[in-house]
Every structure is written in structure tokens, then in C-alpha cells.
Image (cartoon, rainbow, N blue to C red):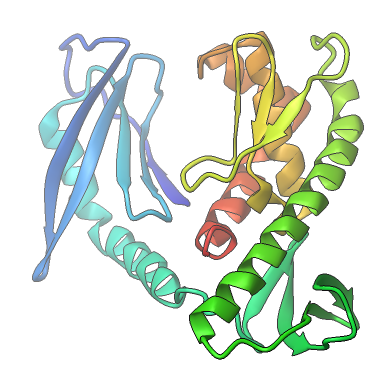
Length: 268
């Protein structure tokens, strides 16, 4: 995610609600239409534009600013917005559907590994990290490439699940002392998701996405701390964000890093 801030100008005395979203506004840039959402927040001190990796453009403003000021500010940053949308779009277009064949890239703890698929009838099917390559061993040949790919994917899914359980347990133990409001060690379960890295129930039980194990440990720590903060503050209130900042002051940079690679980590 990329963002830019503009100084607030007191050009209106109209009152706004605590949080109000106006969706699907349109900015014209050359031949392109750029849709953006406006979020009005009473506690916001200045206008802020964010471009997200999923190509959403969100403009957060103080509750009292006028539509004219918002439109002028967005037009002023039109090229900046357009360029970052292009960058994110190009990045996403590079993510092709996986075929699960030798030479493809796989990720683990933030590192990129080359997938190597071999057949050895004398060995059990397995997945191993060997000399910088993620090696999948099959014990039989498959005449159907799609069947072979399904078998490779199934083996990788199990391997990632096993690694995720081990790594998440370790990272939870590492960051838990920062979450002084948490009693005991929270339970977590794994659930592959396409839209979320994690969640937290009202009872304090965590759900973590096994695909997260493909990210660097710092990103894993961010997601776990984010969910632990929900045990104290269940909603995304101002107090929630203050608490998250206390336990991880640079969480925004870490989140940006994770967001920038999400399309690769979640690609199946």
C-alpha cells in the first residue's frame, strides 16, 4: 500500500459523522477512470490518500471538509495515484496460476525457492528443502499432467500446514510477552483463506492462514500481534490502533511489506 497526506484546510463548517463512507467516486485521468472511496472521520487531522495492492483507492478526510476540496486534492495527485495503480496492476499481472512443475517459485519465511519435482519409486512421497530448492518427490509417474500437479499441490499443502503449525507456535511464544493483557497462551487453528491472514474470536481463539508461513517472520509477528490486540479491543477502534502501535511501532511498514507480496503468497 502507498499513501500520501495533504494538509487540512478549514474551508467548511459543516458537521460530519464520526465515520461516513462515500463510495465509487470517479477521477478522470487521460482516458482512464479511477474510482475511489471517501471516508470521513471526525478525528482525522488531514486528508490522506491510500492506494492499496488490490487497486482500491481510499481518501480519508476530516468530517468537515467540502467535496470541492476533496476533488481538488485528488485531481492534484491524479498522476501519483495512476502511477501506483499501474505498478500494482503490473505486479499482479506477473502472478500466473501455478502449474506445480519444476522451475516455479515457492515461498517460505520470506525467501523464494525454486520448485523441483522428481520421481523416485524407491522413496515415499515427500517435500524437503534441499540446497536452496523445495524438492517434491513422487513415487510414481503420472501420464496426466493435471493429476501430477494435483499430487504435487497436495504434498505441498500438507508441508506448509506442518511448517505453519510449528512456526506460528514459535512466533506466538516469542511475541506473547508483549501482549500483557492476554492470560495464558491462546489457542490457534489453521484455515486457508484468500482474503484474511488471521482472525480472533470473542473468546480469544485465533485463526491463522497457513499461507502466512510463506512471509518473513516479522510479518507473521505483525499478524499475530494484530489478532492478540483484538483480545483487548475487539473492534478496529482508535484504542486498538494505539495498542498495536505500542507493541509494534513500525507495524505500518511491515503491513505494507506483507500486502505487497500477498498476491504471490496466496497464489495457488
